Image (cartoon, rainbow, N blue to C red; front, side, top):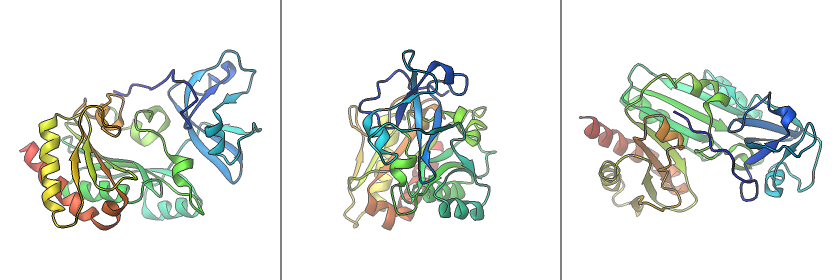
Length: 282
């Protein structure tokens, strides 16, 4: 079950904000909101706390949080509880892309509770990760959940990225609809700036190591280095609050990939994951 990551300060957390007490009836700490500065500048944030000292109608964020909206100054804006739209088909996804929007998508069959494929940062946030999640779901005949965000001229990451430990199903209708399912395993696709592949998540090390072996074999000859995360790695993804872990009672596998891997070798990654997961479930 989701555990909200709340109570953190705002300095060093550009995706976080606090709200004044009078706004708490709209949104609870740990949930997400969308802030509009104007028609061209808007972004999603996680409400980290209620600030009892703030005047009514106030949203507070650190300077880095305001800079996500194109300014370092305070401003008059609009708080919107509609964080994400729902896209039911490719036509609606394309429309969202054209409109610099943020959508969540449910794809595939959700009858099989052995696996759920996840891509919380799809579209132009972390390129190709949603494609990989949907490819794997198709291969294994399971369901996928992804969020996809775009921004005309670039900057989708700054506008739409939410840390995986913050994502709250109360703010995502499609994700919330999956909470009643006890998935045996979850796989989440992510992008990282560094080259290579990092296999993390809350699953046991020997299981993640097996996934890493399949990936290394599939990517042999490409020059891509595959690493299995250990405790303390910055992108280990082992937190119980991580989406990939609470979706399956801690048995999650998180795949972090550099840009080259996602652009050139996505199919090899998906094939290796499908084979390793079939062995693990076998």
